[in-house]
Structures are given as structure tokens and as C-alpha cells.
Image (cartoon, rainbow, N blue to C red; front, side, top):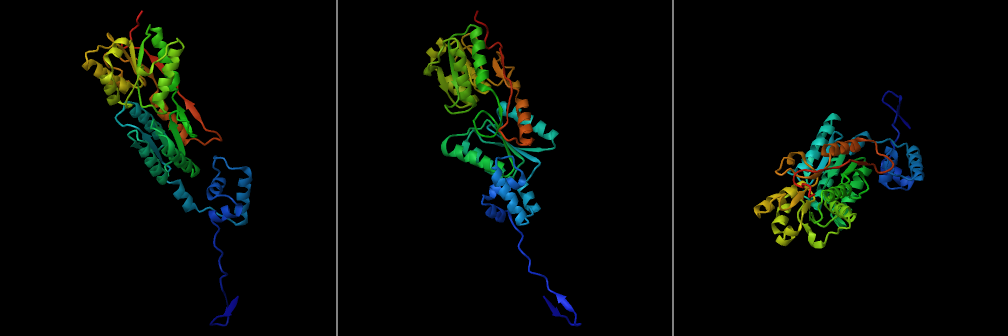
Length: 357
């Protein structure tokens, strides 16, 4: 449409501009959710039905949809940061995993943000929500409790939403969550420890266990039971004593351990080294000598704790390697299936469990 100008010439009026199509428009035309449309257009490895991908691509073409680079940048967030969630900062087990994560991340030019749950599932959920909002490149969860019921479901939902947005979740545990994981073989390691102790001539056992909930601690109890069962030895409920998964937990359990049970027991297995050290201190304070009166074994074989007196029998996990593998998973291309990497543990027999024959 034209109109005369002051000089008698015609002036071309700009045509009315059409609003640029958005991802919402594409999703509506394709008849899918916005999240599905986003995954289809971004090439996410999370499963999208092929027919949905075809509909989304056709809708995008018809609408002349062009992705908003600024919005994509916001969605990507800080691509140079890995979030690491651990249970305790003072526990050498987590410190060595963290060191492995940090060293491997530095080789990739990445930074690591470390946060602590204090073994509270609600705190873990809070941290996952925080790192999801910050859109870190990957979230690595090491040994935190999943909890049960509503909290566990919320944790899973948050991580699934985070991955749908392009993030990567890596689980250092055997929680059964549907995310890439580094598997520690806790049941295998504890089973091997039980068999090694049987080979040394031990026949009467007690276990200082963690809380009765799914996780590494309970897997170690199950594996130890399996190892003893191969020799037709069964642990009675009174022989499995539960406490916090920490030095304080081991100390409390050993302090309250029935004197007659100590007298009947040949070796005490504590399901991590920190609990074993707490138990060692408590037994000494009660006048019980290790290993003269009762032998003692732990799990994890954390390097700084190997120089105890007596030297502690334990199951060695290559913890720095665990951390490094978690980073590699978090930075790798997502596969169509969940990726699981395993590390090999090994029994380390030392002076706290001398041979009985």
C-alpha cells in the first residue's frame, strides 16, 4: 500500500510483521509436550518416539521455527561446572572420591562445586533442585541416601527433569536409579571378605551395620551374609548391630555391645573403615584388646586410615578412580541405554585379623 509523499512520490509502508514461532507453537502443532518438542529439536538421546520426532520436525518446518540462541544459552547454563554431592566432608571415603572428581575435571578444563548432605535425603533433594536451576554440566551424587517414598520419588523426578533439559546425572552407588552410574560391587567385596576371614579360621562373627535401609551399607551386610552362608554359617539378628554410618556410629555400637556377645565373637566386621575405627576406640576403652580378644575388619581401605595399630583389614575400593570415572560418564555423549561402569575391589588382610590356625 502506498501514499503520496511531500514531493509527490510514493512511500512504501512496511507490511505487518508476523510473530516468530516459538517452541510452544511447534509443540502445539505437533501435538506433543514442550519438553518432547525440545528434546526432538535438540537431538537429546533421551528416548523420543520416532513418530513424535517426525511430527515435531514437520511442524518446525511449516512454522519456519528458528531456535532462540539466547534462550538455548540460558538453558545450557554454566557448562564449565560439575556439581558433586557427597554425604560427609570429614569422611576420607568421600574426600578421596572428591579428589578423583576434581583431578579429572581439571584435565577437562572444568570446575567442581562440592556440597554436603549430612546423609539427609531432604537435603539431597534441595541440592539437586539448586544445581538443576543453575544448569550445571553434570550432577554427580556420591553415597547420599535416596530415602524412600515421596522423597525418593521427588529426587528421581528432579534428576529426570534435569536430564530432559540436557544435563547429566551420575550416581556413585547401586541405588537402582535409572541414571548412568559407577558401581562399586559392595556385595561382591563383602562376600569376598567373609570368605577370606573363613579361610583364616574364623567361625563366629558380629557385624556393626549402618541403618536398615537400601544403600551401600546394607549391600555390604547382604554380601557378608552370602559369604558366610557358603560355609553354612548364619548371622542371627543379635549378631547384626546397627548404628550411624560414621565413626560415632561405630563407637556407640561397640560401647553398647553386650559383653557376652563380645566374648562369643571371634571377629567383628564394621561396614566401613570409619565405623571400624570408632569401634576400635570403644573396645579399647572397655579393656577389649584387638586382635588378642576379638579381631576387627572394616571396608573401603581409605589410605590415611591404613596406619592404625593394629593395621586394619579392609576391602579396598579405588576411590580416586571412582571419582574420575564419574566425571568421564558425566561429560560423555549420552547413550540410548543407561551406562554403568564397575570398579574392582580387593580384600586387604592385615594385623587386625591374624590367622587362627
